[in-house]
Image 1 (tube, one colour):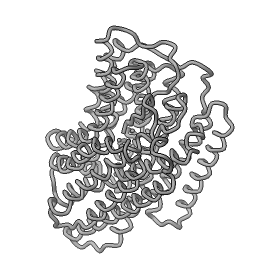
Image 2 (tube, helix red, strand yellow; image 1 turned 135 degrees about the horizontal axis):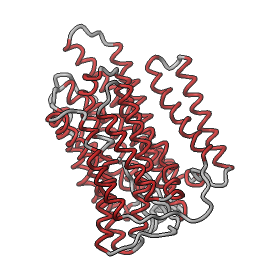
Image 3 (cartoon, rainbow, N blue to C red; image 1 turned 180 degrees about the horizontal axis):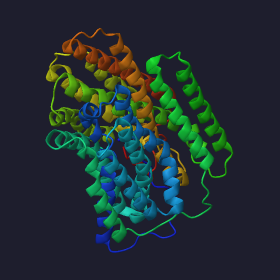
Length: 493
């Protein structure tokens, strides 16, 4: 579920107009939010059909998801800077045009390579569009009760977007064609462009507007190399290519840290991640991203490929987790001031890990209501306990001028974690299925199920590690671990 929060820089020109016009701006920006979040899940349901039509390999299938998450996550911080310096309305409109064009390109893709490129381009333009939209929301609703209402609407759309994506993806794939899971963005983009031109007023940040291009290049190449190295591990962790790309990625990310320590206007002020509590929260965000983006993708494969659910039925079958999150999240929100975030962040991952362990017991001829449904409900409970405090910790102790970068880092962590996690889970899945002896379709489904089970176990291990991170890093008085009321952390997927 993720993008950046608006920066705390003061706009040189704030959007103006009647109160009614401001609420129409909210409708437009919330629709943008929906597009960004929805696009992270809508393709998941379409992937089996796309793989069959375009004859994608399992690695290519993974990169259809990874390309979007990696480009989106790696470019979020830069996208936020561009929006602030170049103009938020201008960046928003360019992002919308590019996102719509990339969606159309993907909808008409004739090969796996074209589809992967289109998904990467969607991520690039989403990284422009999403932070610009949130910055515009911030300057449109600058204070008071209206601001709280606007952010509540924005956050609600973010929470519902993933579920909407799964259902809409199922409807389009089953009753129209999988390509419409990409083409459906085009009419949304047209509406957003027209409304943005008419309703939104330009605004920019004040001050010394210098871009950290060297930092942006090194972090993008470093993350890309790291994710690609994990993908190559499918052929063996000891291969020269795997070690080489992993080492290159680690080296480039180390260079990125070195650059950020010395540049005047860093893309990521290191004081944001150097804090133990926030640093721990960002690490947990990466692990949660790996589960929500990576592990759950294999659940949709199991539902459609092994259990034979039609696309729409597969989308509906994942809803119990979303419903559980929606029920438990308000309870966790009420508990947060009383007990603080630490207990929730220790217990929540363990509950979610237990659900994944239960889910790993799936069989090729198993029953959804026995093997899958209980796990989804428990997983939703655990995830709700994680999401609520983690969003708060993103801005704990952050100075107002760092609020945007801190929230952007949290959202980028989610996407990057999903990219790395999906690469690791694909490697685990491939290693298990390659060892299986396949003689007929039935044994092939058994092999697939064993691979999915292994991916779920790997995700459960990650969540246990997240709980340990919470024990070690999330320390202090509960009052000090919650941000002040005027700080906002809004997640765009």
